[in-house]
Image 1 (cartoon, rainbow, N blue to C red):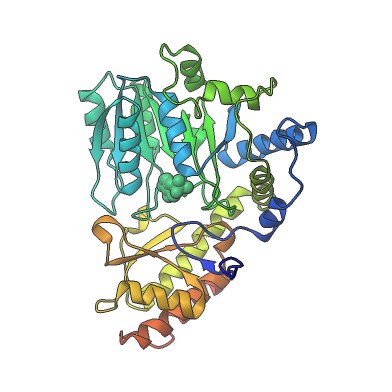
Image 2 (cartoon, protein in one colour; image 1 turned 30 degrees about the vertical axis):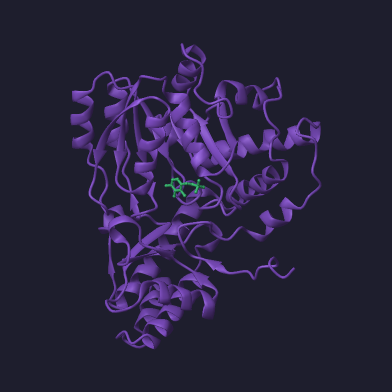
Length: 389
Ligand SMILES: *Cc1c(COP(=O)(O)O)cnc(C)c1O
């Protein structure tokens, strides 16, 4: 009977991140009927707040029931009919996942690869578009959590739109931590997950759908390949009709609503600046401890930092010590970075001076204890200096 009642830990990995205490309290509010007028009012407020966070006036801006991957499936399955062609940009695990999902819905996938730790090059996308003018979709990951790269979207969105293609964007690790330029770039589909920079438990996948994409959904010849993620049906529940499709995860919606309120109160620009500042301090600390960053400065993802850990340090053992002795979780490397790199998330509520200085101090302690040469106190001094500048 002691299996539950977990201790609170500081989740500084690639997600989930810690949920805000206000969000956790909202989860325990009384469950209502999913068509109850009081719940409908919460739904309406939630979509309004979500439009603010996505920077959009798109009518269909709603949470999908499921984690971030459900958002990905929803975007892909609603943007393509079987037999359509899609250009999918791959710069890490989540681009790969998008290609896999796209193939499974019966589409033909054209892959555009970038080396791990680098963004996808617009020239490569331009070439793929030229060679495949019949493609219907360009899919891309905005914040590649497996590498720590923030993908610039301006040029690629322009290429897609100039050729009449729909832009599908994975904003799982960017939404709530930085701008997701939905209306600014006219992104056709953008989706996210609640447990990264939105500081909510995992379980919902916010999505927004542009006007042209909505036209496509209304006029498609074949039925959507998925019943559960068919936006033409889900939108009838979220729209005025309140038509029953599936039971909304009512209490998760309270939590999500509270998470969005917190973002609105802070203001997304202020929140984005906070993510940038704390990452800057984290990087200063890591570099002062003589660790090398994976990603070049202009492409660094403010919510997730990838860093090569000192040679000779045992990856899993170091992370276990951090968890056991300090209650701090960080992430291991994936793919080509496995066993070389750590992934440090500073997401939403966790992106604070306290998190940064705590982690840097803890890292120094465990690295020294494992025999690594780390200049004493240098990490803390450098990180702390960023806040005084
Ligand atoms: C975490 C993540 C996902 C998957 O989200 P789940 O909630 O694990 O399903 C998709 N894309 C990116 C970029 C992610 O970081």
